[in-house]
Length: 343
Ligand code: PHE
Image (cartoon, rainbow, N blue to C red; front, side, top):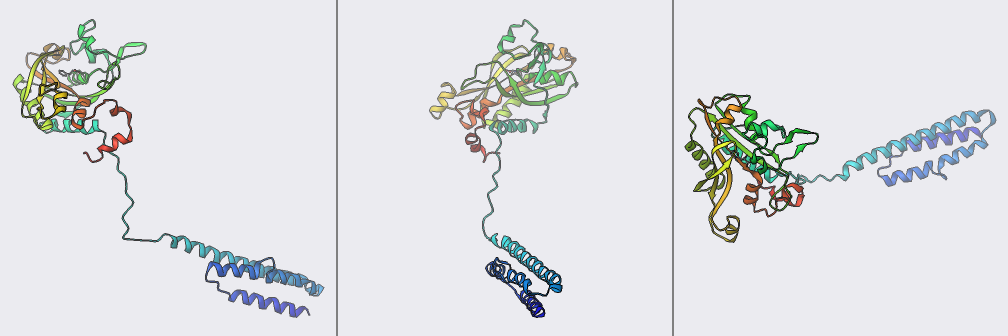
């Protein structure tokens, strides 16, 4: 009797080995048939009752071995199917267009700043950058604006708390004194950067903005050199055909001027932004005051120079017809995405 049961077990074992389920469905049938609660192996274990006492242990071992083999085979097949399924589910269409890879866009301030810097680099100016948290001396005193000078009121200054000798620079002119105290002429720099003034935030003004400063100091630098340089710049950036220099005042330049470019009066907006004159004010400039050169340790008898400074926001607003300066600082993607096609 026992031997028959052993033979039956061996036979089941052989049948299981010969099974080759080809799909997940067939594998499930395989599982139910052999490993299920009503499966053949369950039945086989039940047979142990009929096995002679002295062979029960042997049968138990055999039945367990078969069960383990079958379970291992099932797991192996299942893993194979699942792995294969994973690869199949990525249908590979080589003709499909690639996922769009959204590029960021440059900020309009950077676009305009880079353009301005690049125009001056072409004629030999080199970029100079310096700190935004500046000392009083470099921002004001060296620039011929000592304490009590009324011109300090032109720019409302943010001072560093508990240290009135330190401030947030109010203009990039502080880079002039930084460079001139370190370097002897010839000096030809262009200095882009952020500046701060304690102003009420409105559509037209902000407490932080950007400027680009230019400085040229060498022997025999004349007002005519400045005019020609700025005319070249106006042509390059605005395509302007005409510029004009109006007398102005800055503590650190003498004489000082403000430059206008001819914008034209073609439509209503032109009337609005030029206040009906056709001229647009774009920068302040002048011959470096000899006192500034001396403050910085440069011989004012040997050297002369010119300097200019302009706000970037205004240029960007004109160029892109942006109606409110605050858009430039809000980082609203709906605004910024509009510049993704620009350089
Ligand atoms: N620093 C001046 C301003 O902020 C601009 C300027 C720079 C004027 C250099 C003359 C020379 O308004």
